[in-house]
Amino acid sequence: MYTAATDRYQKLPIRRVGDTGLQLPVITLGLWRHYSSADPFEDRQKVILSAFDHGIFSFDIANNYGKPDLGSAETLFGRVYQDNLKPYRDELVVTTKVGFEMGPSPYQHFNSRKNILQSIDHSLERLQMDYVDIYYSHRPDPETDPEETAQAFAQVVASGKALYIGISNYDAEQTDTMIELFNQYHVPFVVNQYSYNLLRPEAYENGLMATLKQRNRSLVAYGPLSEGLLSDRYLGGIPEDFPIHWSNESIFAHGKEAVVEKLNQLNDIAKKRNQTLAQMSLAWLLRDEAVASVIIGTTSERNLLSNIEGAQNCQFSSDEERAIKAILKA
Image 1: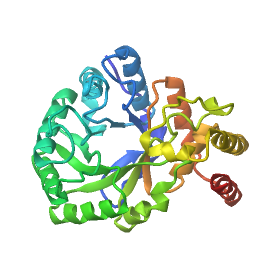
Image 2 (image 1 turned 30 degrees about the horizontal axis):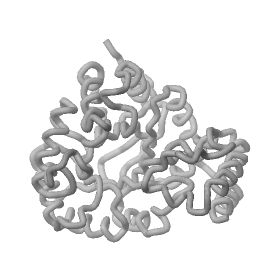
Image 3 (image 1 turned 45 degrees about the vertical axis):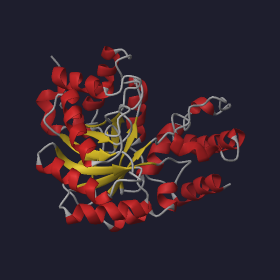
């Protein structure tokens, strides 16, 4: 019988999301890759429980995670929840999403009222829960009227199936549009989950962070290590078949050799801070309080603990900031 560590809330900083009542640990465990029916359940359960023991009470999933067995990431977490974490439900922040493909039907992707309302029921069934804490629109829908989407999310909240609503992969203008609609329909919108890492600061360059700050809301960063690129594994070179996420493809615009040079220069700064490159990369994002949490996708308990350690020092001197920004602009 699992019993959570009694000192779990002493191990990781917690941040308030904008001016809402929602609070998140600065690190969230994501189940995008390698948390499926094809992966060893006991190993994945161990990482999830270790995360909770070390102050990570936020778990990020989506209805299409667990490829090729879509939905199996939710099923895996639901099993861990039923077997171990159910007594701690009041402490957990469990998030899932709707919007990417779940099948060939036009009602198995994007943000129609029908897809949103049926997908939350399917997700809750797989998670074996009565509600999720944040229900995300996983991506903008180019065809459905955003008002229909906002109304559907309002119904999800009114039915008690989600406490808060988030959006993901929405740019500044799209975010502003949705916030206006959410306010109109009294939808408790809290965060935009967006691709953000040291090598891709687009969230600041395209005005998204400014919009969120103006609206007293926060950003949750996914891909903070760019699929592991921001680690010491690639200081000697990046393989041709490196599995870069679609949102990070621009990182290689000037070639992989240029990226390797930047990684080594950044690693030199990290060493002087007594951090690994991965630790410093997470800390760099968290230096802004408007970044409520960063999502890591590790299946290694060692990497998990190392990332947690890195989140303890998110302060950068002015000299460090100037040096890092100079490397990134080169």
